[in-house]
Image (cartoon, rainbow, N blue to C red; front, side, top):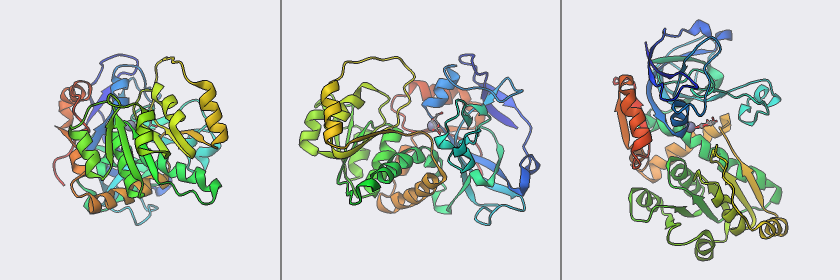
Length: 369
Ligand code: BGC
Ligand code: ZN
């Protein structure tokens, strides 16, 4: 069967690889799930892997099958797979697998303290840009029929879910935390999905991003009942004076200097969630005393988040269902750029690297339902 792969460490090595179809017996304990891949989304991580800035091949292979934002249909299950996962049902598999830290042993490998990450499609494990995969049912999540069109958005949604779920989890320390106003920084796929998750939790929401409105993403923000502001028109201080103080700020800009501005305007007892992966070496001058003092006197929290736990996959499924009910057609608008077939991998990487207007580039792997 076909797979889109790279030679990690070699820039622009994306190619089509011929691999053998996996089978249930590759998964121990009768927990195997064989899945026919329907759609796979791609993102900045895939771009970095093809640029040889990130990623590693599985031991013994000189290629890595990429793609981690998967969606597929179950073909076959082992005898010990729970009956929520059955042939014909839609599923999404998670990305990270346990290493040796205790967090992996309790199913929270997103909190691993290991130096190496085992991530399907990213590091040391093959991904999903292929025709079939097998996985242990512990890492597979069932989706209802109604998510057929938008289920490929679940994995990126879980990144937003983990951030917001953990903000609430952390603030249980306050006994009565009732956040009212939230600010999302960035209006790319993750920023938009964070905006959706925040609105579904009833927050009064502002989304701040670089481009000047109106344009498609600012309109998507407004369709959620949120307010869009361009950081070219006003800085975060002005946005906070107008729309804050913010109980929750979540960053998905990829531009690290903005987090120090966000730290400065975060409201008392507020949480600032960081989710951007910034591999660079940028340095900026910050208002160190002011930020420190406001964090101390305001009991504020800054927290990083990566990947997601099973609980975030479950709340992600719930939120996709709710979003379809409350904002019909909104999620579909994120699926801007379909690529038809694995063999069009060059078009896929071009859309990912050159199409600045694309929200979600995804590959239709298997036409039939
Ligand atoms: C993925 C996460 C992953 C992270 C770091 C992101 O693109 O969505 O699941 O943990 O990259 O590799
Ligand atoms: Zn990703």
